[in-house]
Image (cartoon, rainbow, N blue to C red; front, side):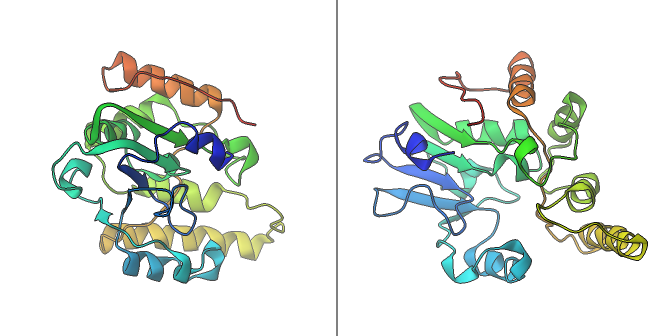
Amino acid sequence: MDRRLILDLIDLSRPGLEIGALDKPTVTRAHGPVAYVDRADRAELAAWYADPGHGIDPADLVDVDHVWGEETLLQAVGGRRAFAYVIASHVIEHVPDVFGWLGEIAAVLEDGGRAVFAVPDKRFSFDYPRPPSTSGEFVEAWLEGRRRPNTRQICNHFHDRRPEGAPDRDEKALTEWAQGCVALCRRAVSQGEYIDAHGWVFTPMSMARALDLASRLELLPFRIADFQPTP
């Protein structure tokens, strides 16, 4: 999404929060009063993204103001509904529990505040071989109160994605790939390590269906002001 489209939807003069800005914040501190929140502090994120395969230079990461992990977002930001807007660009696909995540974002917005989400369309990303996420997966994650990607989310992300331009793997490489994916799952189970993954896969239509389900379950504390198709 063109960042200008996002910026046109918010009042940059008011306090805002951007989730998962990493090295490409949509709103910079030069734009106005913004705080950055992520699943870990800058040092931990830098260690994770030290692998060149992620395509992120750790030196370019923003300074994280609030860590959102085991506690709620409201607790992480100090217990106040202090933000006029929240932005999350290419973040929702990473979260362990979409419905719970949306509810926690609503809890930090002031009355009339706006949340803006840019959601990747799986048809134009390395997730294109994967099916869209299903209603049962959303409900399961919400009922579990999931706060870390589970083994299914980790395995699906690392095993089933198809990076653009990636060469076909021979039999030996396919076996090593599968074993490496399971090794990551073991780290999550045995060491409690947070393994970042695309836990969710969307198209615009499947996103609309997920939001409709959340609304019918009274888990969507938003009024949808705008819904843009994939450019």
